[in-house]
Image (tube, rainbow, N blue to C red; front, side, top):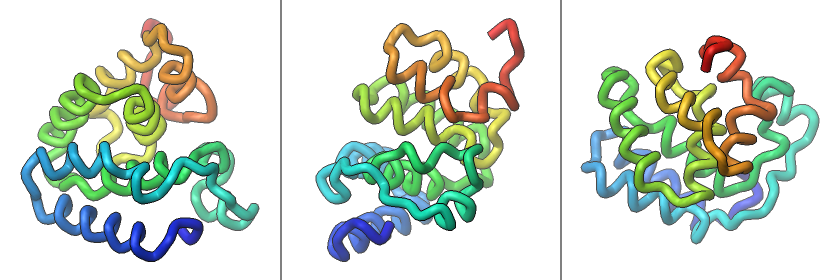
Length: 152
């Protein structure tokens, strides 16, 4: 995330370390909420090489903003050794998240470890009547095609 200031990157990296070490839920939720105050909400300025390195068109990164990428980094910091605990934490996040947090959460599902554990959450996203939340799951997001069936 070369487009954010060093202080913001240091804050984000410290929060990632805390979360990876098993910080209490309130640390994760507070950091997830605070990300835009540090990163801003500007669109990512990615080169074509950046896009290809990050998984090409499949990831949709080139349409993301800095806060969405920062929130994804925090999600990726969750201890993936216990997939059920992570899935429960994501469900809890979805119940208290604001609009922009939900978009970042749903965009990130395809990148998280144990993606099959997030089917129930993803189903909520594709059934959302909030356009941006639905779009986070349905547009430029391979998760739905790879993990959800047609009945969803």
